[in-house]
Figure 1 (cartoon, rainbow, N blue to C red):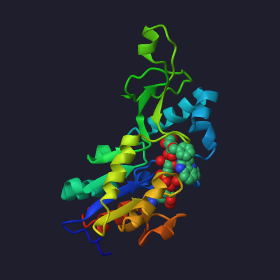
Figure 2 (tube, rainbow, N blue to C red):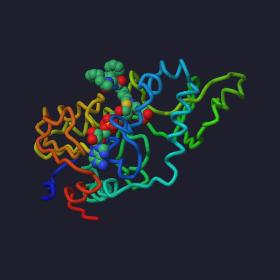
Figure 3 (cartoon, rainbow, N blue to C red):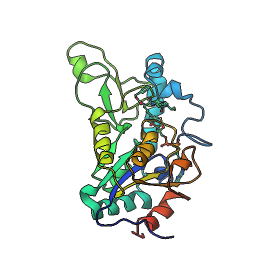
Length: 248
Ligand code: BJW
């Protein structure tokens, strides 16, 4: 397989989804064996679901926190680190994944647009989101200690962007600025994502509108495959090192 043409002026925007972590052993969302199987989306990944049954939602995320023990980045994560080291500020990685594996691998120019599994925040006060690896699997609902000190009972929630919630505008502004410069030197690579969830699913059209090249690396042909100039089907951990010319 030929490596992608990445010259001295090429700027690369990468979008990753659950498929990039599949070979590390993290389940994807949709399809057989996916995380949504047995959990209607609105029950566990919406603010309404959390309001209705916070215990169910915390159990879902607690199990996922616990399941991350021993999970490590794979060759796809590492190939992206190598590309970033080559390109510096001409590289930006946007991940929909909340598993933290890109950071573990060493990615720095990286935005987690759907939040982070190992981070919690208060539903009431404005304390900043904080690292929290606790798996509250016994049905206990975690409370904000800062609110408790003031005599207020306030639940913690996972620092995750649920359906119907806004993404961080600063994150979207960074992506827009990177795409905004546009031109033929802009290369967009989407990896391991079904292209169903917006706004991330719309990035490919934004890049096309600006005249950039678009490449997809995915295990199977997703809904939005036609929007890409080139489609490479197969496991990201095998294809990416070859496509990025950093064989591992
Ligand atoms: C491999 C592989 C291997 C396997 N190698 N590949 C515009 C139009 C229509 C709707 C909307 C719109 N704008 C906003 C919306 C509403 C909504 C939305 O998109 N709905 C759609 C379902 C239609 N979006 C939102 O609500 C977003 N908020 C927002 O836009 O705010 C403004 C607004 C609000 C309301 C209305 C309008 C505007 C927020 C979206 C938050 C998504 N959050 C989730 C859950 C996070 C919680 C958690 O982690 O538990 O994020 S949903 C879930 O899907 C998760 C993922 O990040 C996301 C994407 O999934 P992903 O990564 O693509 O995974 P899969 O499983 O779907 O696909 C994996 C792929 O990998 C497959 O194709 C495999 O083949 C492949 N694969 N192994 C390579 N080894």
